[in-house]
Length: 452
Ligand SMILES: *Cc1c(COP(=O)(O)O)cnc(C)c1O
Image 1 (cartoon, rainbow, N blue to C red):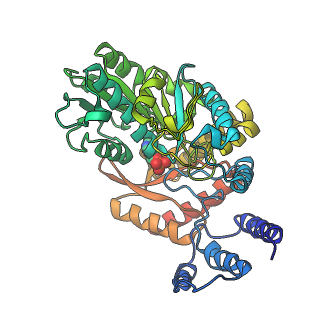
Image 2: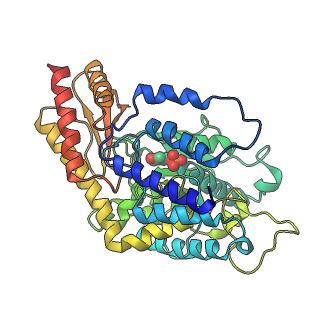
Image 3: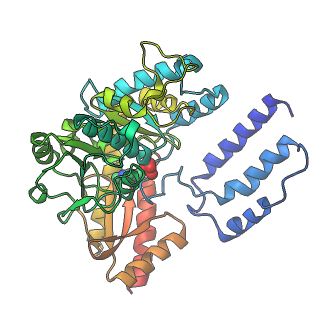
């Protein structure tokens, strides 16, 4: 098989897979998962036929995928792949560019610069902000907090990149009690520790209570959220930023998906005040719907980001212009800006706003139908997240298990302020009204059976 024939055949296989998304159960069958055992074979002694290799992957792998690319997956916060983003991903795969250095890929470095400008525009962030492309919000949180650590300690006369944290001036780190685990992980990787942080009490929606902020008596980093992973709620950024800025503290925003509300005029108000922060982390693989993996770190003063991230070596040419690897932890990496560019270039401002509004409308449709049927929606559905309880914890768990086994759609579970709840996150461009109705029919049918 020639390379050309191989790529044409894999295109056909991919098309068949994507066409099948409409029909299939969202979660693979246990037979399909059991069949994965066939992949557990000894490493072949020599080269094999490529068609056989790809055939094996498709025939065994495709049935064992979760249909997160389709319109009826509502677990975690999961986007699909916009057509333009998927197509760009294929082309970029053929290009195989290393986006770490400008000299290794003019296209990757130029497109990243263009895309950064567009992102600041749609996310309503200040024009002076710089940024970089990473694997997701976890790495974006990590990178942003490294910039924060750099800046805060530099102000104290301490070069943390050179000297490390042993003996460094103390830094207060403040998070809301509903902080995302990835942010705690980032703090632990940076030597701040998961447990020495100050956790600020939250309200019934999971928003950090500005009135409960401790006095900022030391150099401080305050981490706030745009979009709680369960409720979708936004911390009161205006109030917190005002307090933090009076104390000279750094404000970091975990806006993995919520930050995108800024791109839809109807929801933009929710993100008011977040533009006053010093750094932001967001995902492109969630609400923007580009293929995994893709996240973005933004930093108000790019010098702090570079201060934490840049490397120099004689063989790494540097010039006057932006060197992509000076803004992120990685050196070699794939050119993530390409899919983001394709997504934004194909949607335009109104297409992006429509994507945000449409998914939020779907979430509200879920919430109103479930409420009407007598079930308890636990959160204010401000964006795309719905938490629903079907009675006591045991009953709710049975409904969730029933929904997952039924396969029409997939929703996960959570514990929300003492309640067990099913999470519905509508984050995919592919979700249609028909998908929502079909999923609601299944959820209500199963809930009715379980609550008898
Ligand atoms: C998803 C999420 C993260 C982690 O993002 P990854 O892309 O999985 O690394 C962090 N914070 C919030 C609020 C999230 O929703």
